[in-house]
Length: 227
Image 1: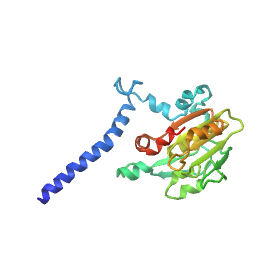
Image 2: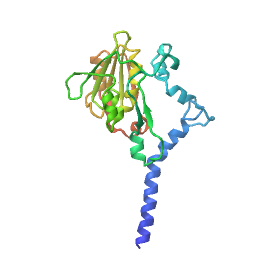
Image 3: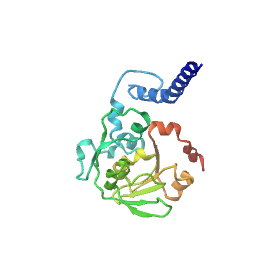
């Protein structure tokens, strides 16, 4: 009887793991698809990943692709960096034999950054390198999770509202080069109308930038239905 219960537990666990991770694995598989239609396999390509590691895709979607700088226009800034970064997926997956990532900073910290961590505005930094010494090294970008953060660049043009999880924080410095203001809303902590915020602040463009697993599972996205 005990062996039967153990066997049933293993089957149940396998079903749960399959239902949970199979959609994510399919997304990963089709990310190598040479077709722009996600349901039809056309062939293998790395083109989407070459596009992903620049901000070109997002800027082109916003109609401003001509402003994108090529990778050769950047150089790693002389800030401290981390060679032992292990993120959320590392912690959740149990796959602990992979080599850690490196956190580097490629955009000069020359913008005005304002944070609303506790509901009141306070001066912040594009990079908080002190976070590289802690467990959550990714918090070095903009100081970590917060309801609202605004990056201002007087040389930019237009205002962008970025509905995002923390994965978009490393993209924000690149976008700040193009826009006068980049407003970052994290719906896990910001519980008001995103559409109302966009109207009140004269936002020109809105982008939703999430990691795939968070986009699939985040129930806070229902906030976007508020007028």
